[in-house]
Amino acid sequence: MTDTVKINRGLKGVYFERSGVSHIDGAKGELTYRGYSIHDLATQSTFEEVAYLLIHGELPDAQQLADFDARLKSARHLPPAILDIISACQDGHPMDVLRTAVSALAALEPASRETGEEAFIENGIRLTSQVPMIVAAHEAIRNGRAPTAADPDLGHAANWLWMLKDEKPSTDAARLADVDFILHAEHGSNASSFAARVTVGTEANLHGAIVTALATLAGPAHGGAAEDVMKMVHEIGKPENAAAYVKQKRANREAVTGFGHRVYRAEDPRARHMRDGVRKLGEEMGAPEWYEILQAVVEAMQPYARHGLNVNVDFYSGVIYQLHGIPMDLYVPIFAIGRMPGWVIQCIEQQRKNILIRPLTLYDGPDTRAYVPIEQR
Image 1 (cartoon, one colour):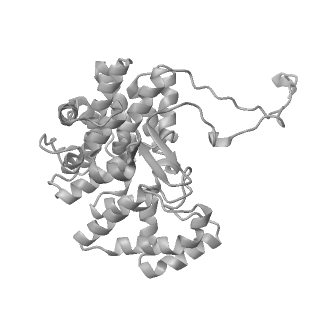
Image 2 (cartoon, rainbow, N blue to C red; image 1 turned 60 degrees about the vertical axis):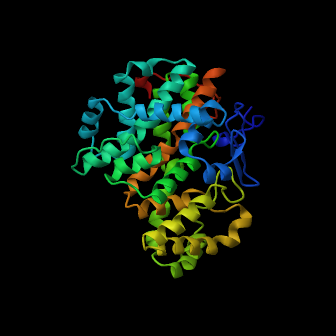
Image 3 (cartoon, rainbow, N blue to C red; image 1 turned 90 degrees about the horizontal axis):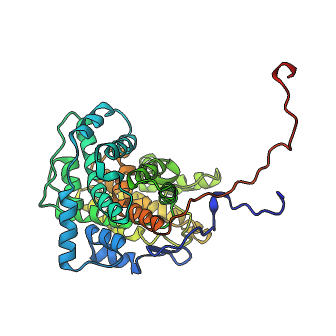
């Protein structure tokens, strides 16, 4: 039987469900949310608008957007017990703290136990607002200061930066954070979204699925690329060192972080928007060398583009966070902040035609054999 069953390791190339949320054409390097090009959304939309689009299926009109924004802002609060939990584990990695806090919210907020579609939407909106608050509160507490209260006059991205740094962001900085969240909002059946669907398949609640997604995202093979790119940039040091760095990596048959993607053979369509952001922010902050190092790596990697080793979105994200003075261990939590609406709608889609996700493994162990009592072994 082993010879007749095809094994798709990692479920590569396997379609397990239909989805009307995002479409990825890896060969052409195209991405759409609900049929809208990521380029149009990144240049013309806001995170709030994109979150509404993902969850409800259509772009909102002015009143729908205002109502949705009001729902997000009204959810910018955490139970006092969550702050106590954050304080108790303040020395932990931010992803562990975030996962623990979301799990605790499931126990502290009775509404989180509801599992109907409307409950998923309501809980999803609330979590979309609470996740950045948890990350910002932890950053404050572990640095010995009180968490910054949310500002109801600021949009989602600007308020996140305000809570994180306790200072109002510039218009450009807030917009760049907004674009970052848009680009990370949804990406098909990636590891964390699939894991969340597996959890919903058991008829669990949304909070349980988001905890699963967070635990999956925390793995460096999924969410750690932006942090690894920043480490690489520090290792290279200067643009003129990039070519030798890449040559040595390729000679050792080692991957160059930020290049290649499980689904894209062409350049990740999200990358161009982060690239422009790095260049502008670097110039604004008087640190253009980070962008120059990145571009030197891109140039050195150009011969390998024909093999599908093109730049991906995470190649640029880390430097943007670095320019903002954000610690490296917050890079993955920032990914989670942006991905929240994508996880929410993936869970809603799974719930609509729910089925227990139960793939098979092909047994290749010993043949059936006789049990030997312990005194005869």
